[in-house]
Every structure is written in C-alpha cells, then in structure tokens.
Amino acid sequence: MYNITLIPGDGIGPEVISSAKKIIEATGLKVNWDIVNAGINVYKKKGVLIPNKVFESIEKNKIALKGPITTPIGSGFRSINVMLRKKYDLFSNVRIVKTIPGVNSPFKNVNLIIFRENTEGLYSGIEKKISDNSAEAIKIITKNASLKIAKTAFNYAKKNNKNKITVVHKANIMKLTDGLFLDCVRKISKEYPDIKLQEIIVDNMCMQLVMNPSQFEIIVTTNLYGDILSDLCAGLVGGLGLVPGANIGNNMAIFEAVHGSAPDIAGKNIANPTAIILSGAMMLNYIGETKKSNLILDGVSKTISEGKYITRDLGGSSSTTEMTEAIIENMLTIKKFMS
Ligand code: NAD
Image 1 (tube, rainbow, N blue to C red):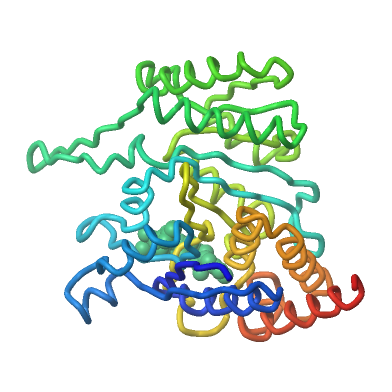
Image 2 (image 1 turned 180 degrees about the vertical axis):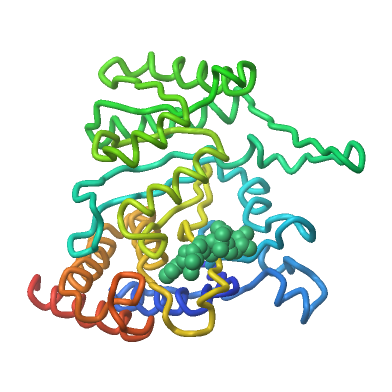
C-alpha cells in the first residue's frame, strides 16, 4: 500500500486529477490517497492559502500528485507552485515531450526531455519597486543548484544511453548569471566524456525547436527558459493537454502536468486528462512500479491513436470523463492480453 498526497488544485485541476486517480487505481496499485488542497478556493473557505495539512502530508508521504493551482497575475499572492518547489528543494523539473501517434501535428518524431532548474533564476521572488516608473527583479543563479540540475540531466542521459545534451542559456548577455550556469554544466559534462554537450543560446533554440525538434533529446536549462521552452515544446506535440512533468528533489517528488489551471475551460468536463495521467505514470515509474506505469502509457497511446474518445483539443468531441473511461477500458484489454 502506498501513501500518496493528492492535491486537486483548482480550475481544471479537480477534473483531471479525478481522472488520474481512477487510472492509477485501474492499474491495480493499492493507494491510500491523502487528499489535501491549497489555493484561492481554500483561502476563501479557511483564510489560509496553504493549510498546514498540505505541508504535513507532503512531508510524511514524500510523494504527491498535484493538479494546477491558479496564481493571480500582476498582483496578489505569489505562486504556491514555486513556493512548494523551493521549500522542499525539488531542484529538478523534468518534463517529457513525446509524439503520441494519432495526434495532429506537423512533427512526427519528437522525443525529448527537459531538465529545468526549479528553485532559483528569475523565479527567486525577489522583486522591488524602485519608483512609480520602474521595478526590478533579481535573478539568482548558484553553483550548487546549477551543478545539481546538470548532474541530474547527465545521469539520466548515461542511464538511458543518450549521447548528447543541449544546454540552453543566454550567457552572451547575462555573463555572470547564465555564465555561471553554463560553466557548471560544462564542468559536469567533463565527468561524462561519452556524452556530447551542445550549447545553444535560448533565442536560437526557439527557432531550432520549431524548425526541427527531432534533433534534440535532452535539454538542460535555467528556470525561466525551461518554463517557456516547455510550453513551446508542448505545442510541437499537440498541446498542453499532453505533456507531463515532475518536480524531483533528493528524497521527495511532486508530480504535475506542465499546463496550468486553464480557467477558460474549467468546470466544463472538456479538459484533456492525458498530461496529468502521464504525470501519474511518471510517478509510478519513480516508485518502481514500471509495469503499471507502462500499462498507463499503453492505454493512453491506444486511446489517442484510435481517435474515437478524445477531447476537443485533440480534434475529438469526448468529455474528460469519456476519454478517461476509454483509457481504462483499453488498459483492461491490454492487461487481459498480457496475462
Ligand atoms: P494554462 O496552461 O492554464 O492554459 C493555456 C491554454 O492551454 C488554455 O487555452 C487552456 O485551455 C489550454 N489547456 C491547458 N491545459 C489543458 C488541458 N489539459 N486540456 C485542454 N486544454 C488545455 O496556462 P495559463 O492560462 O497561462 O495559466 C492559467 C493559470 O494557471 C495561471 O494562474 C497560472 O499561474 C497557472 N499555472 C499553474 C501551473 C501549476 O499549477 N503548476 C502551471 C502553469 C500555470
């Protein structure tokens, strides 16, 4: 029996998290879900954005599946997502961007993974109003965090027999901050002589990605570039509804989709549950339940490639619930066939 913290979030969060929960249960995994929540809706009810129960649950279980949480734009409270990543030093934000056959996209063979530094950079949260007409934000890059994300990316490459890593930076302009990040990645790369390090400036990277994304396999970068490139890459494989992610530290991990709370489609039962379902599959892999994780991947792939029960972002007309049920059905068929 696994104890896992489940954070539904807000917007489309509760809808897609409910799908992921059903799918994980359909694998046969025995889970004791500890359901806790944070965000503006909780604040309205309880007067606190992140109740202690959330921290206690994450600290106890050391593993969580989380829906998106809205962050107000311009003013209001700071991102709860960023706060959790920093508080628990979940320094690796890992995002898997992979073509799923059947999805309409001009690119057919995208298969890349982004390692985004997750605790600093321009997300330091240190901002200051200087006058009525100016404000500043502090970008923090440390050797410690840069070495850690670089090491994670190279370890992954080695374990998965990959021979190239692309580091994305803007060290031509930000010589001290991005310069330090780049130096750290170069330093780690020397420990892996069989893996080639390709260095690309972030603006060129955007162009390269939309021209020929298949040339990249592993990307390592700073917090802000990683955030932007993740959404760009999601667009290459059919949209945000498809791309899963994980925030991983030394002994704790929070799994969540790349997408946000999608207020424009919230509460309509039309969100694509795939991204959070695949985040759940990443979580199962992380805890060593590889077979069950693969069963989810196969169920999702089959459902999407059949194209019968897919949500409207993928060109279909099914609801979140119908797509979830179809995935479960396919998983059960695959399971029967395998046994
Ligand atoms: P978003 O990812 O919520 O939505 C961008 C676009 O993609 C929208 O058109 C939306 O409808 C679509 N989309 C997203 N997920 C989808 C899905 N599963 N199925 C179908 N379509 C989907 O980005 P946004 O609108 O920029 O942000 C909304 C809110 O989410 C903001 O408050 C932001 O701060 C927050 N956010 C939270 C997280 C997180 O919790 N980790 C991540 C990103 C954004």
